[in-house]
Amino acid sequence: MNALVIPILWPLFTAILLALVNGRYKLEKALSVLSTCGLAGWVFWLLWYVDQTDAGVVTMIVGGWEAPFGIAMVADRLAAIMLCLSMGVGAVVNAYTCWTVTDKQQKYFFYPLFQVMLCGVNWAFISGDIFNLFVAYEVMLIGSYGMMIVGASRSQIRQTLNYIAINVVGSTFFVGGVAVVYATTGHTNMAAIAQYTMTLAEGSPQAAMVTAGSMLLLTVFAMKTAAWPLFFWLPDSYPSVPAGVIGFFAGLLTKVGVYSLLRVFGMIFQQPGHELALDILLVLSGFTMLLGVLGAMCQWEIRKILSWHIISQVGYMVMGIGLCGSAHPAIVTMAVVGTIFYIVHHIIVKSCLFLVGGIAGRVAGTQELKKMGGVLDLAPGVAGLFLIAALSLAGMPPFSGFWSKFVLIRAGLHGEHFIIVTVAIVTGFFTLYSMTKIWSYGFWGKPKRERAAASYRGMMIPTAVLVVFTVFMGVFAQPFYRLATDAATIVKHPQQYIAAVLGEEALVGLPADTFDEALNETLDETADATAEPVAITVASTNQFDAFKSQSVRNAHDPRNVQVTDTKIAASDSGHTPETATNASAVPDAMPTQITHVDATPHAPAEVTH
Image (cartoon, rainbow, N blue to C red; front, top):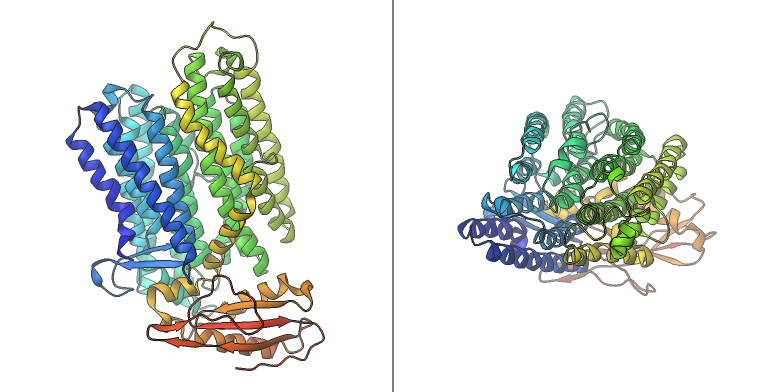
C-alpha cells in the first residue's frame, strides 16, 4: 500500500508550505488547521481499512526493494490506532493554538515546526525498521526542540538546552543498541528480527548478544518514556512549552516511547532470556507510578502537577508491558490489551487536562493554585470539562480511565503480581487526591477577580471534543476493547506481521510453540463453553502442521481438542479464507487456512485434514 507514506509526507510538505507563507499569520493558521484535520480524516480511514483486511496488516517497502533489505513501512492495528491518536490530538491542539499563539511565536515558524513534529511522530508509528525508527525519533525531536524554544524566554532556553542534552545521550544509546542488534541478527527490519529471535536456542551466544542490545534500547525508550529513574528531565521541561502545544507534548511524545517499548519488547525480541527486560520493566513501573504521583502531590502549579502525573501514568503502561513476561499467554494478551487501552485513554485525557489547565489559567490569570480560586463561578463550563477529565485520569467509572486500569489490574491479579497491583491501586487514590487539590484551590472558593482575565470560550470547543471522547470511550468501551484485543493479538503472536512483511515463506521453520500459545490461549478462554465450537485462524501451512501436532500432543488434555472441517480455497492470487463447515463465522480470517476446533469435553481427540 504505497499510500502509507502519506502520514509522513503530508505534514512535511505542509511545513514547507507554511514556511513559505510565514508572515501571513491568519493564512498560516487556516492552512495548518485544514491540513491537520484533513490528514486526521485520512488516518481514521486507514484504521478502518486495516481493521477490515484479513491479516490486519498493510505494508509498503520504499523504493520497490524487497524486505528485509528495503525500508519497510508497516501499519497494523496498533500502528493505525497510534496514528489516529497522533492526528486526532494534533488537530485538536492545532485548533486550540489559534487562540494562544502570539505573532512573535508565528514569526519564528511555530506552525512549520509543529508540522515537522507531527511528521516525526507519525513516522515512528509506521516504521517497520528499528534504524528507521531512530531516524523518526530525530525528526520528531527537531520539531520538539524548535517548539520548546520558540519565543525564546530565559526559562525556555534553559529547559530546551537540558532537553537537548538528555536526548543527545539517548540518541547515542539508540544507535549503539541498533548496532548490536544488527551485528547479531544481520537485520534492522522488525519482522526479520522477530523471525530470527524466534529460532534462537536457549543459551546461545546470539541470544545473549540480542539481549545485550535490547538492554541499550530499553534504556533509550525508558528515557523517552520518562520511566523511573530516567524521568528527571520531564517535570521542568514540559511546563516551559508554549501554551496549547503543551497538550500535544504531554499526550503524545512520551507515548512514542511507550509504543516503542511495546513494539520492541512485546513483539520483536522473542529470544530465550527476553523475559529479563520485561521483569525489569515491571519493577520500574512500580517506582514510576508511585514516585510520579508523590511528586505531583508536592506541587502547587497546575502545569507542574500534570507534568508529574505524566510520569505516574506512564507507570501503568509500563506495568502492562512488564506483565508480558507472564508464563500464561492469556495473561500476556490481557496485559497488552490493557496497555493499548490505557495508551488511548491517557493520550486523550492528559492532553485534555493540559488544555483545560490553560483555559483555567487564562480565566484566573495564573496557574498557581494559591493565587487562583473561583474558576467555577467565573467559568462553570471550564470547571465541568476539568471535572470529567480529572475523574477519568483518577480511574473513576464510567470514564475511560476506569476500564483501562481495570484490565491492567485484572491482568496483574491473574499473574499474582500483588505488590505491583497494590502500587497501582494506591497510585490511583493519590491521583484522585491531586485532582481534588486542583479542584479545591483552583475552581472552588471565592473568585479573586470579577471577570475572566482573558477571553477563553473559543478554546473550549476543541477541548470539549477530547472530553466527549473520554466519556464515549468509557460508556461504550466494548468496541474499543475489541479493537485493542485484535491489535494485541498481532503484537504477541507476530506471525501475521512477519508474513505480511516478509511473505509466508518466512514462517517456515519457526518453532511450533510460537503458535501453540495462540491455540492454548483460545482453548483456555473457551474451555467453559462445553460444546460450543471455536474458530481458529492460522497463517500458513507451516502453522497448520504445528497446530495438528499440538492437537495430537494434547490428546489427553482435559479439553479433548478435536480438529475438524479444514478447508483451503485456492484462487489466482493465492489462498482466500472460507468459512469452515458448521462454523457460522470466522472473524478476522487470514488468507490460506481456516481450522475449526471443537473444545468439547469427553469427545475423542482426532485430527483430520
